Each structure stands twice: as C-alpha cells, then as structure tokens.
Image 1 (cartoon, rainbow, N blue to C red):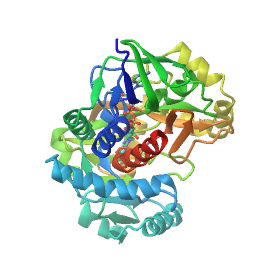
Image 2: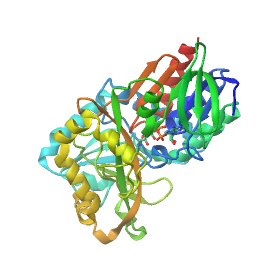
Image 3: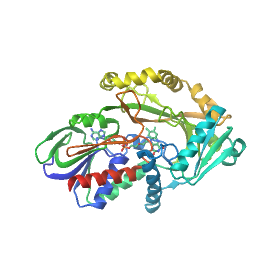
Image 4: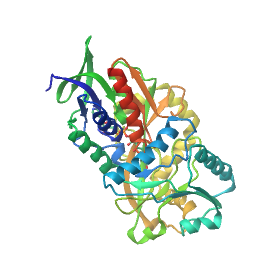
Length: 401
Ligand SMILES: Cc1cc2nc3c(=O)[nH]c(=O)nc-3n(C[C@H](O)[C@H](O)[C@H](O)COP(=O)(O)OP(=O)(O)OC[C@H]3O[C@@H](n4cnc5c(N)ncnc54)[C@H](O)[C@@H]3O)c2cc1C
C-alpha cells in the first residue's frame, strides 16, 4: 500500500497506456504509475492481435484514426529501427473478388490518397499474382506502407524505457474504485490505495466500466467482439508471401478475414468478428453473467442487433463451421483446403457501441475533472500508439499545469 502522492496514475498496461506512460516520462519530471490487472504487460488486445502496422488506407480522412494511424505508423517504424525490434515494411494487397467490390476498392484508394499514402498501386486481376502468386481476384491494390511487427515486444520496450526513466509499474494491481477529495484522487486497487492528481484510463475492454466507477457516464458501452484465427500448416505457408486482405464491408469497422504473415513466424488466417459473451472471453465457452446482463441492458445493443442480426448469425456460423471459414478464405486463395489450416489463437476487440446502436467509428477520448478516459481505441490503435500516446500525454501535461 502506497499513500504518497503520484502525479499521474495510468490504468492499463496495454500498448496505449504504456506509450502514454513512456512519453510522459520522456517529456516531464512528473511521477507516473501504471497499474495493470494482469501479471505482465500486453496481456489482452495488445498481445492478441494480427501484428499489422496499418497504413491508414481505411479511415475517413480527417478522423482521429486516419491522422493517428498515418503519424503513428511512421513513428512505429522509427521506434522499431531505433530499438532493434524485428519488423518488416512488406506491403499488402487488398483483393476485390467480384464486380460489386470495385466501387469500394476505388473508395479505399481515394481514402488512402487523401490520407497521404504514396505507395498505393492499382492492380488488374492478373497483376495480383506478381505480389501474391496464389491469390485470385478481379482487381486489387498494393499498399507499400503496410508492415508487420509483434506488438508485445514493442509494449515491453515502452515499459523498459519508462522504467529506465523512473516510471513505476504495478502488475497484479486491478483498479477497483475511486474516491475524490478536494485536492487529489484516491485510487483503490487490489494492491491497496494510491493517491494521484490525475487519472488516465487506458483500460481497453473495461474502459467504460472504469469510467463509470470514476463517476463518469461514458454514454457508450464496450462490446467485446472475439476475433478467431486459424494457422496455415507449415507445409502450406508458401501460399502466402505477406498480407492478403479482402475489400471490407463498409458497414462494419472490421477488415474481414485475411491472411497475415506473422513477425514471430507462421501465417495466420482470420480474424472473424464474433460477439463474445465475456469481455475477456477467448473461447466459445467463456461466459460472464455480469458482462451479458450489462450488454443486454444497454439500449444500443438491441438497436445494433435489430440492424445487424443477419451478419451476427453469419459470424456465429462461420465461427462454428470450419467449412464456412475456409469458404471465406478461398475467395482470396482458391486452392486453400480445410486440411491446410489448424485452429490458432483468438483476440477480443474492445469496440464501443453508442446508445443509438452505431458502432463507434473513431477513437474516443473523454476528459473529466482530474481524469482522462480512453473509451474507444480499437484497431489501428496499436499502429497508432505513439501518436495517440503523444496526444494523451499532451492533454495530461496541460491538465497538470
Ligand atoms: C483480434 C485483433 C486484431 C487486431 N489487429 C490489429 C493490428 O493488426 N494492428 C493494429 O494496429 N491493431 C490491431 N488490433 C487493435 C489493437 O490490438 C488495439 O487497438 C490495442 O491493442 C489497444 O490497446 P489498449 O492498450 O487500449 O488495450 P489493451 O491492450 O486491451 O490494454 C488494456 C489493459 O488494461 C488492463 N486493465 C483492464 N481493466 C483493468 C483494471 N480494472 N485495472 C488495471 N488494469 C486493467 C488490461 O489487463 C489490459 O492489459 C487488433 C485487435 C484485436 C483484438
């Protein structure tokens, strides 16, 4: 138990919390404490993702996602170079497989150009195979700025730099509640009480709940969407050189099942986007009554369900049927067979949902008295972490002046 006053406490040792913490200690002399519920950093979204350094192709020009992805991507490449973290700016292809996708592909190209991408190349059907010999489609884009990295070593490096600058990390330390007095905040955790002048909530899948525990009504709710992966068998890895993506459905913030060469080795196929019945529910059988009842009692959930139930059922079916999953994969690589893939891991996305049933499209950062809450930081927040962390650290510095 610590009673001494810390200037800033950050909840959450994922990539967003750790980028913010590292940058704060590099910029200021403030004391900064990170509290993390798990026994190590990057235990949830950050350690269970596709490991793609996104280019900025998909996001609405002018949005926080677009700006932070483009800036964060280049900062991520530089950070990896300076800190000897394995990464590869390998590029990716996006493949249109039928005529109805051509206007969407064009929209992606326009967005990419508006977002400042210089490495987009339009591909005719047969040109796809110059980049990915086993891919098939009627048209596509090559995006040179995309790359791959493993975000766990990146986050651990943020932590190491933070520690070397006298930052403190408490693991196995779950935020429970907050008391306020006139001059400071008293943060109650499973490891006792800590005092601070400013609290930054980077709690990912629990960020809305943490905000409520702090007396802040976020006006949205985190809905967990599990992303399940298969892995290509070793002897079939030759089918994928780098990254092969479909044209995404513009109604959803998810990119569609794709093939990704992983920096730690192997090729993953996925992730789908299945409604999870537990916030940290990595398996079908993971269920939390508290999480389900909170989800079902949120009016936005039923509005979303009414609009997207067909897609929801399709995702459940594809999650349970390997055949259906392979059918999606065959759109991109026709020769892939059920026996070529084996189950891989899963990640759970913290996707915010508005009261009107719309999935929150952009990053969302909300300020309150002595607090900053990061309430929506889904993909590409890992790519964008150094840029988002920069913005949050600037806000924090301004608030403590
Ligand atoms: C399947 C999947 C694929 C993705 N692919 C990509 C990709 O290729 N590229 C990309 O840029 N992004 C990708 N993303 C998105 C990216 O992983 C996230 O945007 C990013 O990791 C968010 O980081 P975070 O720090 O906000 O959240 P998290 O990594 O989830 O960190 C939040 C932390 O808060 C802690 N915490 C929660 N509650 C408490 C509490 N009460 N007290 C203390 N600590 C608490 C948790 O234990 C956790 O460590 C993907 C995400 C998923 C799920």
